Image 1 (cartoon, rainbow, N blue to C red):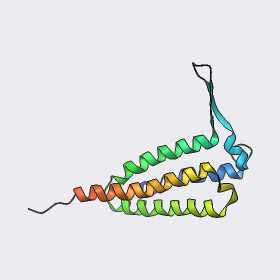
Image 2: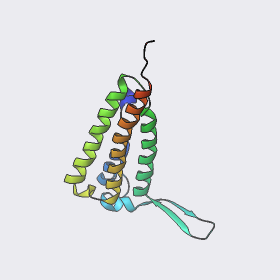
Image 3: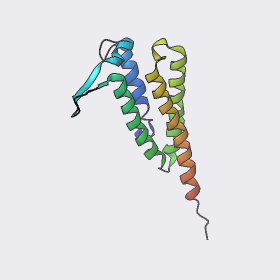
Image 4: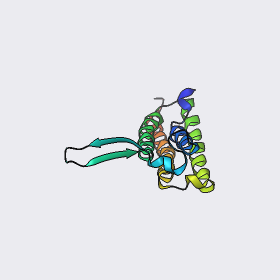
Amino acid sequence: MIAAVPLMIVPLVLYNLAMAGLMGSGGLASLETVVLSLSMLSGAQWTMSLGDLLIVVALIMLFFEILKATRHGSGSLINHMLSLVVFVAFLIEFLLVSSAATQIFFILMTIAFVDVIGGFAVSIRSAGRDVSIGL
């Protein structure tokens, strides 16, 4: 049953924790907090902010969600429905919460949308190949 939990809930929870002040200063300023800074061979300084890290985490979660969509069984339908619920939560928060009206949150919401559409498409495609004709 734990495999039916949509992984896209992780970036949603992390974003809300950042807005609550549990990661950095809190609010929109916490998204600009530098979490990694590297000196490149070219002499340039490469930095990754908390907002960038949230997008990377969401993309990794999307990868595993697409892998989970190839499974067959009763839990896969529940996973797709819960992924849809997570996307709707993203959408509602984007529309109604002022601190969620950022480019980072919009990208996270788009990744959740790709998770929903991709999950259904992969499941339908793989289920069409799994039809046995009883000969």
